[in-house]
Length: 467
Image (cartoon, rainbow, N blue to C red; front, top):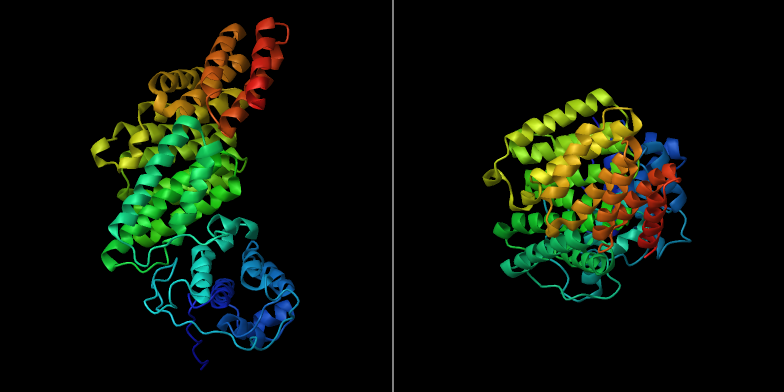
């Protein structure tokens, strides 16, 4: 009978976390024994076992071979740079850890993200700072290129409390509200981006701080909400890797806190980002994940996620499934009750729903030769319904409506009028998404080069985008 494997303590050090990740993937892909995996990557089984226990060093070449055999998508190679890369670049695979490896006693937290050790080095000591910096990024190494880990690892020490109190949670919530408002009104670039970057660094640094049990779920939920709004802001600024880091942090915090509403919102944004950058299949997967246990979500949240599904199908030119998903989104939205929604869902109102579903129908009209009328009507509702607090959403809907009329309508001069209205709003924003939609409008306007009005519109678009 095989002896039971040693229980690992991933929160003890970066090396221990790396070993835990390796064991997780080894068991997921088989499971494979140490010897079987060692044979596949041309090392001894005992070395694999020792790397998992944190008593042996892993070379970068071995990390790359492990990623290939275990099909991790590059998790171990990216993590290697943070765990071994700075101090052990020239060290080959070895059967023992370097002399003097410090053992840091910690209390292992049952959750999946970060430890809450009650037995830690004194605050401000080198071991404390190193461990805190690692814990602030360990859950993210698997989904971000290693240089982006600095999103949550500051170059200079930051003032961090010794214990979480209600004050820190109030500050997290206030930061999220401020960034949400600023992002919707001005876009995710410029000063909003700098505010968002600093906020998520500070929020992540609070996770390993000692926290009373009753406050832990609220802390996780507050960081999750902050991760969502920061991720949305990064997405709008086309800082896509940074956005993925923030969204993944939000998803893991929401899941550990058991916060289904925040989880759904995170996966909705993850879906929209992937759809926007040209990967609707992954976007559809995220939307479907968000709908897991939809019985725990409000009708508005279900509408939001079905809309994301519709946008994914629209990008795939799948007419039947797009129309079906739009219908499911409409049916869910008809049952919306604001009293049942979490506060952050207040943005998803009549205008937002119609604008989001219009995007899905836009792709069918422009690329699948479907009737543009329904998309145009929904965009018109969105434009009329969005106030100045949601200037970006209004501008994007105005731009898409102008593009739709320019591409599929019989009155390009009317499209020019719509385009100039959109430019009046877009000119106040720092939004890469809004700028991309303007470029699309310019391409459609280029089909009517014989009209002086379209030339003027294209020149104004070029000047606005450049600015």
